[in-house]
Image (cartoon, rainbow, N blue to C red):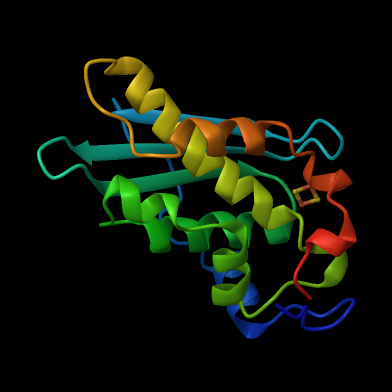
Length: 161
Ligand code: FES
């Protein structure tokens, strides 16, 4: 995935930053994902409404205190995840978010990691509340992996440019 340039934001990023989709918080949400990066102070909260029968995320909202790239990434991930089953939602990675945004400047690509961390955190929260239900395969591993990633320490070589 190529960053648009070292400094420029794509039209899609600007659109999601200026007109964020699904911003806010679902009251009495079925699951909450709170993630943040201590280095930049950016924080993201995703709240989910879930249909347990179909194991589908029927609604999702975000609240992000952070940079423009983090806000655009939050907005995009809510669009990508809404209406998806748990399994489908888990296939959405930071790279999916980057692609759909048309890239981010190289020094902002890590901000999309917060979005992927937020989805995993929200799904973990859901299955912690419902230990009787079977979590999607790979959820725990994904969450553990993401929990150990410091987006600001993300090595450049691990980023698809
Ligand atoms: S600068 Fe920290 S997530 Fe964007």
